[in-house]
Image 1 (cartoon, one colour):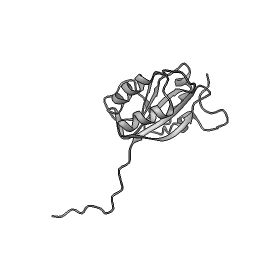
Image 2 (tube, helix red, strand yellow):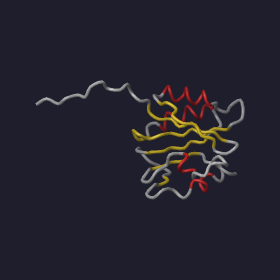
Image 3 (tube, helix red, strand yellow):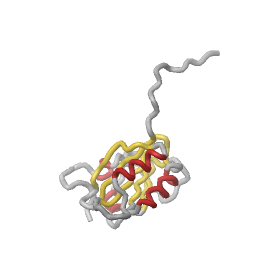
Image 4 (cartoon, one colour):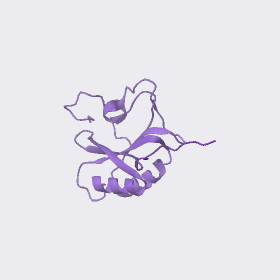
Length: 144
């Protein structure tokens, strides 16, 4: 199975925003995905288990309940500037999550979708990141 749009010359790591030095975790990867993801950028590492500080988490799922269960666990592992990619099948299966379902599940946890990418003909992914707060109008000033 091939991953990534066929007409894009960028590597899969680039499409997913994986850069040098990042800690990456992949959950429930279908056959062939890890091979397509390699080679990682210099200094980037694939981690099976981590307590926290993951820069990119890629979750493959075809069940709505798994999205909710896994997102609540994975947000505790994500770094402040990190992201969770929820990758789900493109079909209309009854138990499979839809784009709107993933988006709403993320919003409930304080995450917003910032990017969508097709990973081959069978998978689509939404990138979820912490919702940006409203911008500060003025800088706080320290007083002695």
